[in-house]
Image 1 (cartoon, rainbow, N blue to C red):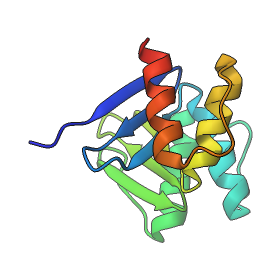
Image 2 (spheres, rainbow, N blue to C red):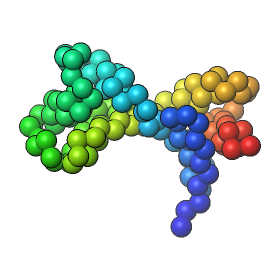
Image 3 (cartoon, rainbow, N blue to C red):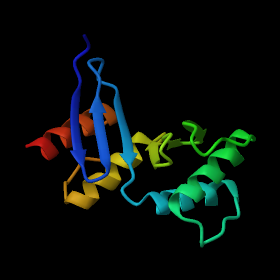
Image 4 (cartoon, rainbow, N blue to C red):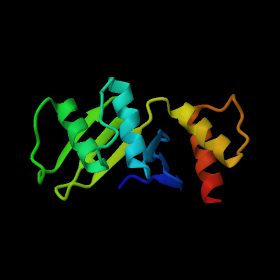
Length: 134
């Protein structure tokens, strides 16, 4: 079993695989705000009156190009984002950052962590995980 090192900071999840590879993900608390981000990235017009479930379902349908049943579980990917609809209708949005070092800088600035611009992504990620878990 591969060993990983993980830290959670707010909505962010930073993980380091045994190989040293760093990944940064975000599990949005503000789902409607995240859906707006995805919609903007797709130039998708939405009704501001839609609730989160309506918005998520319609956005998934737009991305997939097909209609999904209200009681159906579904997921759609768009760029760095994944929108997941549970059978109950609950919507979740996740983001897997392509620019890992940029995401690490964002987190470091949020927590006041001083980093060295000469660090590579693996060094930066490992030190930031240690700082958060410290």
